[in-house]
Length: 298
Image (cartoon, rainbow, N blue to C red; front, top):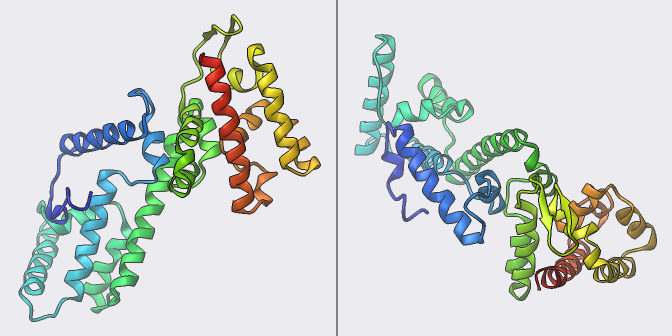
């Protein structure tokens, strides 16, 4: 992305149509990369990789460029041009004229905590001099805005609930993190993720047991009679892996909570486990669910 958007900090007055086209292209690539269906909700596909939207990425580049301008020598050409444009912006605002360009774009990004840097510079000549500190502030502010919007989007539809309960931070989802650590299990992790994002609110018919269900994922993992023997082995391995009390608490959880746990959610019980122990549980779950999928589709 940095190469594809080289110089994007100088783009300005991008129309909603142009931005939407770039966002659509990114969503298409992200879904193809992860092997998702076209109808997979974009809010899940993008956030499972923990990547920002195109608009957020461009915002980051613009504010980092602003930091470079503020840190540059006052006698440099770029600093003189910046001060000239800044003066023009202030003058035109006082005359109630329409502004365009780099500075106006920064103001329109709705990141007041970052734009305040310009205000402080105008009023007091104060700005963050450290490149690393400014970069940290920019990334944190945009990440916070991105997560806030993501949480809002997930709350708009009940079909996102399973994903929202499993993936709680805007960062690469646990399945991809583990896949990088252990590529030999990547396909099994990907299968868990696929089941998590699969639309389950339509009534479907199970060919294996001849029953209808409104949640095919829950039906497959917990209910389908054709998988009873394999499921019993799976649950027995959970009992052998975890302390007795923990395995009882997990297996006696509400069905939806149990499904989320088996797909990668860190439930109340697993919250107390360190990362290595949690990884062991996910490895067991991904291996057994992969075996169930083979049997289910054979």
